[in-house]
Length: 131
View 1 (cartoon, rainbow, N blue to C red):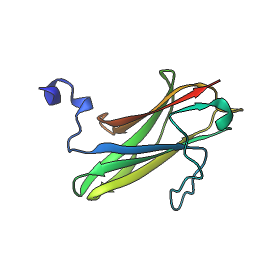
View 2: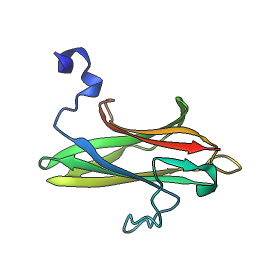
View 3: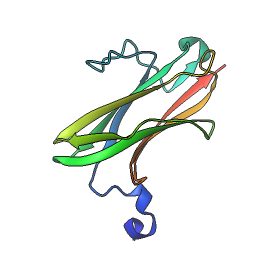
């Protein structure tokens, strides 16, 4: 019933966001992050960029296209490009970053939603930055 009534929230295969790590940087070759931001942090813990690395569980080899959508206090900030992935058994990782125009990352409630090209949601990561 849920798959027919609300298809955007039910993936076509049982993929799911297994873990999400927010950081202030990333090594683009290894996807290693220099730090891990807790889910509720003071604004002094970030500077001018937020990075997220998302690990997605896949039960087998499945081709898929995903994107990451950033929002602050419910307002859209950024949408990553669509990434074609050949999800292999167990998991795969995707990452993205958001840099505010001309300044530091402002306080707020941040969410990053992992979606397929068709809009199906795999998971939502959350980060609260307080003043």
